[in-house]
Image (cartoon, rainbow, N blue to C red; front, side, top):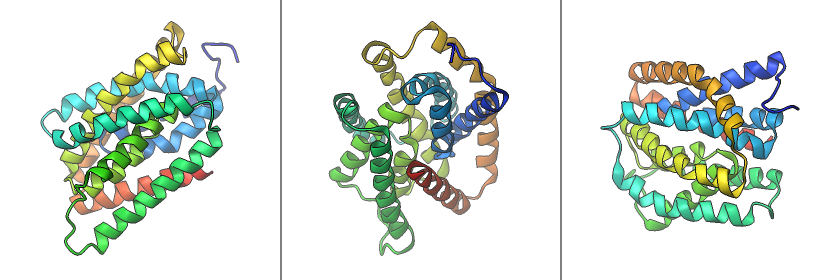
Length: 249
């Protein structure tokens, strides 16, 4: 395929839909990213797709963080970031040692385990207090850092963590928005200098998704205002479960 990509009609449809899904994800519907990212990897290749999709992700992060600027729970972000950076380092170190399929199974298994914990805490926990132990943040921080560097699929992992904290929908969306703003911009040097995936052509092609991203963010913000809190939590759980299944396929 000739760079910067000559796409077939169906590939353009998938590409544009990915921008819409990215916008919806950043507005607070975590999990939609992982539904579309495997298809993007098929079109552009696993490694190349991580750079291409990072451009619209970074743009969407700015929009979401600006809108939810007063809704972030910074104590959780601060707790996660050091462990996330450790996940970055782990991903760079073992990138050549683990196949893409093995990685997807590992992440799918981790997400499935996290989902079981989350469902148990949601429906059967006696006190339903958020798990504040350091090991819990460390586990999800490292897993999220590893997943976001290798495949931009940390959204479902963070969804499990933030839902486990019992955050209301605006705090959930705001905390996720600011966390990923920091994380995704920290990934840019890895793509440019370590993996050498990103150049001017990559940047320009990634920016073709900007209109779709804006539409997704606006639509997501509108929908979150309309969806009741209990329904929102269940919806995020379902989207996360779908994302987990996608990693196994």
